[in-house]
Image (cartoon, rainbow, N blue to C red; front, side, top):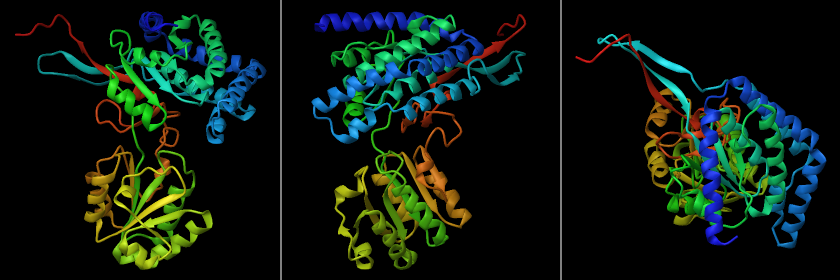
Length: 421
């Protein structure tokens, strides 16, 4: 396609999504669930063709020199297919947030005022690699009453087209227009620029991918964006911590999975327990092959640690590397967090209730925890059922974004011929 053709194509998707958004916004819970369950059935029935389509993407990826980590994210396995199916059925089982009214109350004028939960409208989602995101994004948008335009990476185009066909079958089975979920067919990068520049058709953009993608979207979008850039997460071990708990939490927060945004990247330890705690946890990290980078006080206790640089404190490693700083007290820990954190997730390990409450109140991140691993910062673990991503923004949605995060509220007023005097 030429540049003008791409713009025309994307504008067409936008117009159709806007029209479809009005249909899905008024759809009943039963109709939306029927579409989700029919999509699950269609994916099960098309398992062989989906894996065959994915094989085309895998072969193209290898031919184009994609690394093994990227190939792994791109692959659809039988277990992965089953996870897609189960995910759709789980979203169908979730409570429908749309139409719920809260805080209805009579005011002195005699009117009743409350708030009703409503869809956002049209959601554009831009993502890389993982074809399962196509299913996750479509299911969450559909259940929350939104139309969506999905732009996956060019490396997964065959997989996404095959999945889109299953979603179309599910929508048709429920009597919904197929334009409720549209997958961008072109791999031209100009499609991304067009999608983020159509406020007349798109209400919000959700980017899922690497920091470069998200920075570009955040910089260039003319549509509001729900996003986070980095996951520079901290755990602070207080001098009033149970060190057995601290050991389990800090080991899990770093080594449960490395390449995820809620993994701990910096460990802060109170100077009162550092000489006891650091050798204990360092031995466990050594068994896992984790490289330690520490401040001067850390290296006095752990000579094997590499000297940490200023850059280390602000780095999301997504790898078996950990920065460690010994701090004078909780205030020093919070000062470090407020300076270097990406406002994703922070945790304190302490048995002191007053300090725990201060930490919760004063640390300004989207998730703040007491005596728990940062790895819990996840929509499923928070009981949301699923998430479309994590938001470190302060407006609208913050933290894991599930069904409710894809909605808004409007005021509703009941009167009986009331007039303002």
